[in-house]
Image 1 (tube, rainbow, N blue to C red):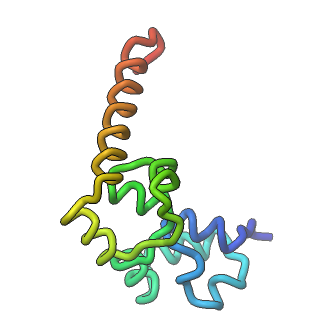
Image 2: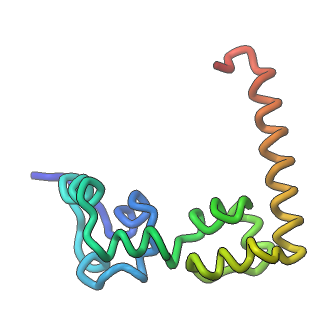
Length: 121
């Protein structure tokens, strides 16, 4: 028997926002083979979601260059699409500038600490 995963798990692995996926995808367990098939030959709905969103929080955070916590601090709780992300990047509000700087500082510090560890590769 093939191992199956919940739709939410499959959506996470595909990098899509589950509520924006077709109802059939949202309501059906996905096998690893089906997930691999979606990755190898994505249907039009998956291509559209990946290109235009709405995106899940982790993808929104990545596209904006902030942490998921930064989104929470800014009160961004809804999924955003490409146009909304583009508008924020084109004219960044103060919270976005502040969170991007914080994210850069934390990333630089983490890299510095990792480089100091004797087991760092």
